[in-house]
Length: 121
Image (cartoon, rainbow, N blue to C red; front, side):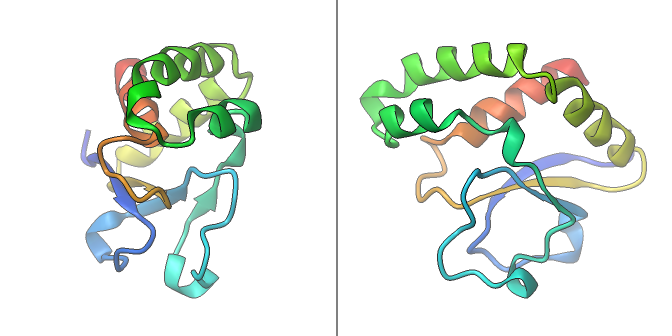
């Protein structure tokens, strides 16, 4: 593979090394313009369900259970395979950066999503 799969907060400046930038949040991040987000695409359907997202609430003590439940959602998601295929194809020519709005870099759904995708590449 030519590219690398990365993750980055949407509030950090976009960089040429980001390559294909995919927003993987269900809700548009507050205070960010489309220009500043510099997205290639927005994949809402690959994110945690609204009920799971609300239950989790980015509370660290719930992360392990959230991780299990979100992986089950990803495994059952009819868009999952196409999402992985898109990333696999894009990585042949450039980096792919999963962009998110959560404050914590260590307690968010993108950590789980990135791991889930990497295991399928």
